[in-house]
Image (cartoon, rainbow, N blue to C red):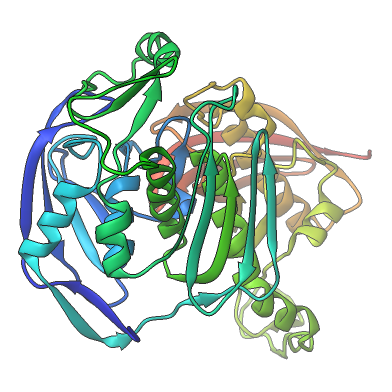
Length: 453
């Protein structure tokens, strides 16, 4: 299948969410080439959408949760596995609640939706990523290695910590193999996990109708197991769904032992890093950009010459020459432009930020005071540049009219826009705003003093 694919027509299904317990109607819709898979919350104002990309993953403890701004969609892996299994590249998933219906705990109903809607090829070519060198991952009890291959294969071993119900299965993925070998495998849990899940606000919609429960050596279910090794096949189903967060198919042979959603998503990040490798190397060995062309000044500010245009970018190394801050208190990754008294900086907010360990466990949010610090650091840069005293330090003196409007999550890119509004001697004042995807998340007015370090 060299061409991208989407659905021929809409298809809908209603039920309850596994963890939320909320009633929900889900509709699969066709989408144009290069759209990817997007989840659309039609129950929220503006019908916000979240792209099914690993950058938008915010939780992956017992399922995979996507978020963008204040919008969240939980337990997306079974839907994504269905699209990946059938080779569907582009689709819109409309939901009127925060979680797809769990149905019977497998992807069987989702397959029926795709069969009802039909699949159609599109003009754009599919851009699969072929693994070039092995990618290895160890995370807790999980061990995963992705080897180069001409197709996509999964060889998986699953068991609990005590080695109960150890199972192995290997499969080369195709639409037929997906439909016959993986899609009917149901989610499962061990009896001793149920109390923890309930106390943490999970499985509110869970019943024996949509999950298999293992108690000691007994299997509790309303019907016989659908496969002799149903548990490992469901783990493979989850892997397929999480790997779809790469946004493109993968050619490789994945060998996984005791996989988890957290490990699956980390593997996707490592695959994405390898996929970016050739571009990064090309940029590394490319010749440096040409120096700015100086032209006669046309203004009346008394300057003898000016650069063509007004934009000036600074990479992180140049930023670190101006700011004394270092990890973990460096709140600006690069400067996009400096235009007179105006400056724009960028901070990539990742789950690896140390403050997410305690702010807050299970619900990571960037502290508002660190957004304020980001504005202060960017304001300090423009003040130092304007004063032409780059050997000094801009000391933060005060902040006024501080407002935090929306939370900032891991995966967000913070755009820090600052304007120097006043400068007298060693004292400067600036107005700053932080934005995520064009929306203001915080703002403040800050005051500085320049001093020798």
